[in-house]
Length: 433
Ligand SMILES: *Cc1c(COP(=O)(O)O)cnc(C)c1O
Image (cartoon, rainbow, N blue to C red; front, side, top):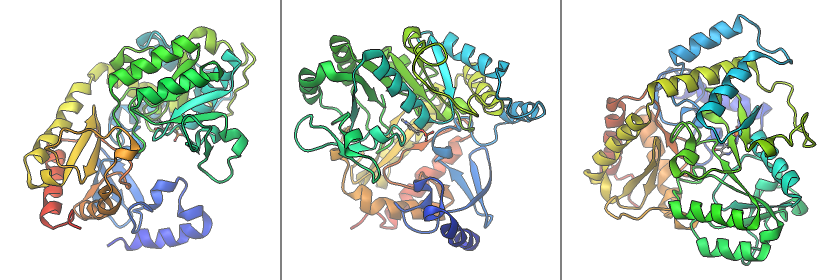
């Protein structure tokens, strides 16, 4: 069935590490042959063997309007006619920057880069420059791109310095980061009481969505804000996923917390490579050429990507799809909660982001909020569920520890199909053992 994908995968493995250009695409977490996608439209992917799938990965989040949205497409087609890179000042990034700073007023200034990773790297540099401190606090289970100082894990003991979580990251870089558990205000307070004066910034995914969906209590985020005020550290919201996804103004809008700096990515480029960091004007004025923090990019604010981002954000403002998306996801929860699958899994969701928690019955109103709380079965059963759904034409994000996404291109009947397929999986005994 996936004969051509297999052929391409074998060829790819000879010339690229693991056959891919970003690790999760290789299906290592679920096994089997990664499907090579030939084209996509709306909520649908088509692979090289001409198999069609309803896509819930949506390029890992950027495609909130679905694949090949008509308005984004026509804006990009027109932009292409004008050339695709000038390496000079241009009006397209200005329009996108003005739209964002107008709609999200506490983002007083913004700088565009090419990925979320770059945005985080630069925001951390600004935080260190602004405070004259070196340490950064991050949380276990949050992902901030492949910045060296963020590829770290907790050391032993409370508030110990971190150790590398990737080969090639030096232990001296790792010691600049303090790794703390999510959802634990007392550990947080203790860490600040010991290290408060050394902490340049705390970086957090306000809805951690890169290691399952580890929804935090609003109190946790508020105490984070308060502690950073007390110790004169900066608070960085990494809204690469949540920005323009949970609300136009991201989790800052939802919680009413104004971080000092924010990082964006994914939706901001409408599916083209864009990242951004922004926030308080005095902090952003530290960035070159107005200040001493160097940061640059040959292809930054690429006019095609800026145009795609602008068309996407304008459409989000015009259509305000957020409550509709959440309602559609609620349909999935309602269906599964009242089905045979309810005893074997639950759906954890926030706005249009969802995660199937395996081995946690829907009837428990328990929410998984930290990595230690993720059921064992996530690892053993998810691969089987993934392939069962794939065989029914449903493409979830290919890892039990990654979230899935709804777009405005998904219909109620897409959702009902997903719910039905999960029930079929339960009947087929996928969740047993
Ligand atoms: C995806 C992601 C990043 C990294 O963005 P890239 O564009 O993949 O470099 C950083 N932070 C969060 C929260 C993300 O989800």
